[in-house]
Image (cartoon, rainbow, N blue to C red; front, side):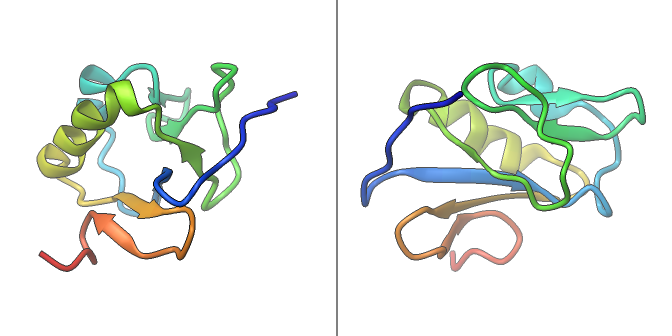
Length: 99
């Protein structure tokens, strides 16, 4: 069981599988956070490396891989990766983030 706590600076990521193209770019950039499942779609993983298959499931982003996750967002052809602040739910990277 995860015992990770959050603070105001924490970011979480989720993938809209309905838009996922299965290219796997996210898993190439940040394999600690993303993985393709047997259905060919990408999912996020928790801090224990378990795939989170529930629709809209979120995973906290370890600070040491944040740049890789942001690169995944920018390069994703499906524009399906969303990064938001845990504290207020505002998307900071992704298709609906304010640029």
